[in-house]
Image (tube, rainbow, N blue to C red):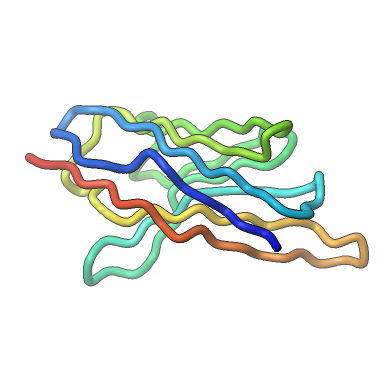
Length: 120
């Protein structure tokens, strides 16, 4: 059974930093991409950042230059270093993993989410 488990959320003041982690477990392909999405109250879930197994990454414009995603392939874990946090970053942050199938296509998994709250 595949699981993605996030950790590292919490309450921080404007301008502060947090680091989120997402650890994947189970039988997983070595060819994959993992990323972060977030959902604020009353809003749709939105893309934050993504990284693949070879280290290529991409960011939403709203977080570019403040958030940094990294990967540890041996641990099947990704991290999101969030700096200079703003109240607008307050949301539940979800980890998403897409793992290639040997037969083609890929499987998608989501974590349970971790709350990030930035006070002004």
